[in-house]
Image (cartoon, rainbow, N blue to C red; front, top):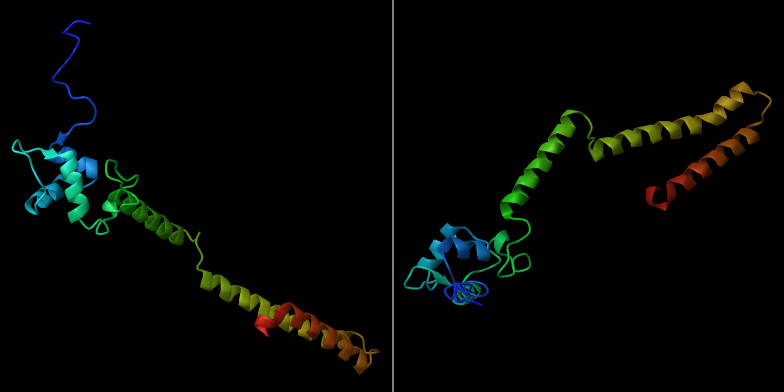
Length: 169
């Protein structure tokens, strides 16, 4: 190998010092937040750069990582950014909200309370119609005795009671 092929000044591995914006990207905060942390005591080298190891250590010891979604330990291990930033999540939530409003305007979305009220009305009318069957059968068939009509009525009521179940009784 020739000495021209070796670049002695080029660092091997990750950088030991980063600029303010580089450190901000590393820990997942804005450069403005790094400036605030510097005012709060984040160690800075004489050349204005931040030593990565000391900066990470200071960050872990001095910043409440539960304060910001972007700084949660589960989502942001030091050295990598979270998969979804706070801004991305906010935009997704706003898009979901707009989609829901559009569904309501197009009448594609029906409130659960409206569905429940409609089905209650349908089932109430069905129950009334079923309970009216014995009297209609008696009018259409005068040869049936009162006992026959009572038997029809009690069978229909028993079937409705069974369908209603113990929770609706």
